[in-house]
Image: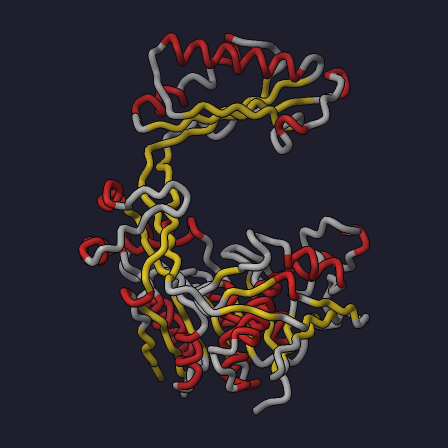
Amino acid sequence: MKEKIRIASGQGFWGDLIDAPVWQVTEGDVDYLVMDYLAEVTMSILQKQKNKNPDFGYARDIPQLMERILPTIKKKGIKVITNGGGVNPVACANAVFDVAKKLNISGLKIAVVLGDDIKDRIDEILESGAELNNMETGESIRPYKDKLLSANVYFGAMPIVEALQKGADIVITGRTTDTGLTLAPMIYEFGWDNKNYDLMSAGTIAGHILECGAQSTGGNFLGDWQSVPNFAKIGFPIAEAFPNGDVIITKHESLGGMVTFETVAEQLLYEIGDPKEYITPDCVADFSSIKLEDLGDNRVKVYGVTGFPETEFYKVSASYESGYSAVGNLTYTWPGALTKAKAADKILRERLQNLGLEFDEILTEFVGYDSCHRNLAVHLDEDLINEVVLKIAVRGKDKAAVARFGKEIAPLILTGPPSVTGFAGGRPRPSEVVAYWPALIPKTLVEPEVKLMEI
């Protein structure tokens, strides 16, 4: 058993800093590179891509990245774990193999984790008695099942552990929890019992700190963000993990950013509900048990973590078609920018009403005045406002009505308040609205499958 392992975060979301994983494997020593690509809406996007082309459905910047890092990870023995396989992990693995062949790299083992995609099993699952009730409304998924775009189960760390046990150099999964990517190598390397819930929780919390990339090394930091050095080449976090569950969060010294008590503590508060019950497929972690110690020199120790047994359910992330939307923008300038924008909004709404158009929702924002903080915004003296962007959006089931709304934006330029600019890109066109459906499914109804591929 190793005395410690170093797990490096390489991506916090699909579209994150492209060079970050390259820096992580070249600027210092790490044992694992973990990359989180998936968000709830990402799965529906990937499913649409796969529907158009069966070779798509994964994060397609992975092959280009692998072309840059494969020689390094092969030479250094760094293992890569990512959920960037999306809804098509096998196609992603094949694309990486193509890169390896191009680089004359052989002996590469890639494991894919399958079984999370349950979209084609919905009828079977409903017949078993699982209604996949919406976790927010309690409604059964039955009325929406024919509109589903995607339905994926959140697997945890154990399928990845199995993949590592099979000798995988790279593990590509579908919808796996962000935290499971980091927890899995700890279980594998240290031989942890997955029923030791304190250790499972310690690894889960380390994964939570790593999952958003540079957000724990000074990125998007609400504290003294101006003291963060070298944003241009910010270092992503690294978890130094120990067999007893202690973890030290750090980064490569050659890179920018900073790791402090404050940056790590702030990330710990990200996207949690009840801090005593952070539920994952692997355990229920107690965030109130976490102890932090700033060791200085960009090193923060995380220890004392406790937790509880996992639940009998997996979470399901599903999406479905829910009508159409369109967004239009116009910019009004000083003097009286806000007054002009509010008048234009009133005129537009009256015209839509006169046309007999009905929408599920009409939303107006005055960007530069209150679009972020809404009612909490400081009410500035209008003479201090140089310009205001009128941003108005509609959402509804009737595509024709949404399209008609798009034709009413440009006319405001010559038939509304003066001093207007900022109309670009043509008429707003209807786009499909994708709605999110969170649910629970008994673990007995889903079985992960690990497939090892090799060249």
